[in-house]
Structure formats: structure tokens, C-alpha cells
Length: 272
Image (cartoon, rainbow, N blue to C red; front, side):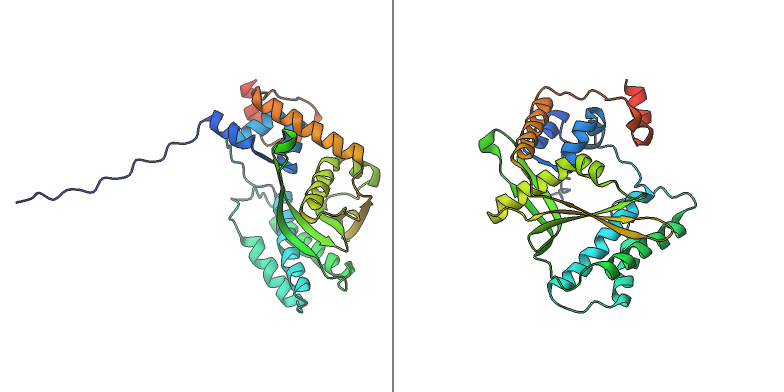
């Protein structure tokens, strides 16, 4: 008699080592990752190398919900289909309760934040130009920069309309145009490079659409010119610094005022 053989269980896949993760990160980079690395290399390490997870902040949840609803709205506009307020609210309700990105660190403010998020969407849809159909929306793009000794640049464009790159942002205060242009340069230059690489054309400009969370919400549009040659050169140098920093495993902290809002403050204090 042949004895029954128990099926062998597959051995669990080994988790990648820190070196393997860093090697993967050296192959591609987004504007978000680049900005984080430039701001604080240790914070970058905690998030992308160590993979530490933190509850999503209420502000981030509001922003991601607004983005998701506007994506559905732009999809209908791109297809030239009607999208009634009821449909907009249904999409909002689904986005608000979606916990795919993990739990939100609510205290007692969820109801108020939910009302604010919906008012932002209503205000934007009412004030935006519905007669200009999108050329593209929420489109993932990449630019292979290995010929320059740099990683592949990746990103997602919120909206392209009339040759202009539009990026949505939620904010708790009215933005200063000059300050916003300066602090967003890594992101806007990255998007311009991605647009040019994938279309073969120069963008007509960039628009930052801030949905401002005031008692009476408002939309503030900051218009920026096409990326200049010095801006592209600066972006390439920043990408070069990113690659070189990862190669030498440079994950030193950058203590400063920004630490007050860092979600890895406790880990940083223990580490340092």
C-alpha cells in the first residue's frame, strides 16, 4: 500500500533586504519621492526603505477623496457625458469610505472634514470651465533618463487641458503665488519633462489649482510659464544628487521646523 503524501507547503517568500529595496529605488523616481529625499533623507528611509506605515492624516484623506471625485468628473467630461450632481455625490460617498490606503487618524473631526471636502468639490465643479474637454486625466507617464545617467522619471498627471498641465492641491490657507511657484518647482518641472517626453511638444504652461479649505471654500489658480532651460538643468542635478545619495546610503536626518509635522518624529528621535 502506498502511503498518502502530505502536500508540501511553499516556503514564504523572503522579504527583500534594504540593499535590494534601495537598488529598486535607484531605477525609478517620482517627484514625490525626490521631494521627500531632498527634504529629509531619514524620513525617506523610514517610508520607502524600512516601509513604516502610518495612519493617513485627515488632511491627506480629504485631498485623496477630492482627487478621486475630480478624476471621475474629468472622465465624464473627456467622454462628453453628463455627470449630474447626484452622481458626483455618490462617487464622493464611495471615495470617503474607501479604506484601501489604510485607516485615517481621526479624532473628533471626521464629520466636519467630510462636509469641507464636499464643499470643495462643489465649488470647484461650479467654477471650473466645463466647456474645455480634457486632453488627458490621471494619466501615468514615464521618461527614461538612463542616457543621462539618471533613473526613469515616473508620475501621474492630474489633468492636461489646452496644452496646459493642471495639478490639483487642497490647502488650509490661500496660497502665495510666488511662494507656491518656488516650493512646487521640483513637481512642476518633473511634470513638464514627462509631458515633453511623451508628447514631443512643449507644454503651454502649468496651472496649480488650489482648493482652499475656508469657511467659504474657494479655488485659487496659480499660472506658471513653461519649464525653462535652467529649471530643467536644476532638476537633472537634483536627480543626480538623489542617485548618488542612494548609492552611498545617505539617510541622515535634516532636523528643522518641518519636524513638527513629521509622522516619523518619534522614530527619528530614537534612531538619532
